[in-house]
Image 1 (cartoon, helix red, strand yellow):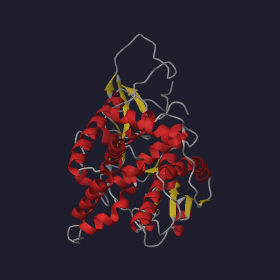
Image 2 (image 1 turned 90 degrees about the horizontal axis):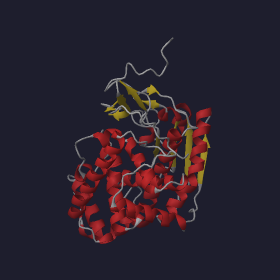
Image 3 (image 1 turned 180 degrees about the vertical axis):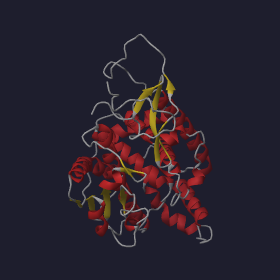
Image 4 (image 1 turned 90 degrees about the vertical axis):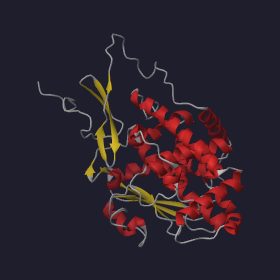
Length: 387
């Protein structure tokens, strides 16, 4: 008999795999597909104990999700926020290119739009800038990207590997690239947009980009910035946090459960070296995405849980006038200026001492990462099982 296509004899730690978070058993070990750098590889594997007991099905197995006092508070805050929210008004034009995948991605984006507009309402952001969302393949998208922006850059934009992005408030453009979303390290990967993992992947990414537009609106409305007031870990981490909230609403899953989706950054979860907040005051151009995207998400969780205010993700820009009167910009020390700006914004907005916040948020991030590491090591799912 020919070996099945999913035979696992060749699976070893570090060998290539195709889909992140997929699992397989080989040699008595359960291997999980993780992302290391730009490559998808099998992890070291977890030794499986022999058992005569039947394996419980998802319907009769109770999962103990990672929890903490902060997560318990966020669970309640998220539930309360959505219970009284109404979608914000917005002028968003979704244009779809040719092809089956473009249509499928567009369907998921449209389904996710209400949850994003609810987030705008919760954050008290007025979406006054009209936005155009382009969804299509690379050839169709490229001529539509605003010249001079990162979205048009051949190395990191649409002509390159980018799967999605917000091109800036002044451009009024968001894109989702079929080619970028279906590639990994330049190689084509298989996706099924009728299944939970890939639907969640698209929904999460689309709302993440709309959160960037909201951050831009907050900066413009409160501080007259066309960019982002704090464009660093709070930018990417905050966008991930807002997207996670929207998924809780969209899929009717408690925040404490949907948040384990952050474990898709499995190389960050499994890393033994913690990422420090001060290392990521600025994230632009850095190859390691753990700081702003993964750890920044956890730091944002701690910030919102500490303040009890989701607005902490965007409205630190309200402190611009006070902060501007105290700081003088030194072009030779841009990162130092941004750190002081963030510290003063937290102080005036929420009476937060920045050094104390760094210590406490770092401890929270390290503890949360340890919980997520145990969750992955036990072979628990990082995708909702109810969709």
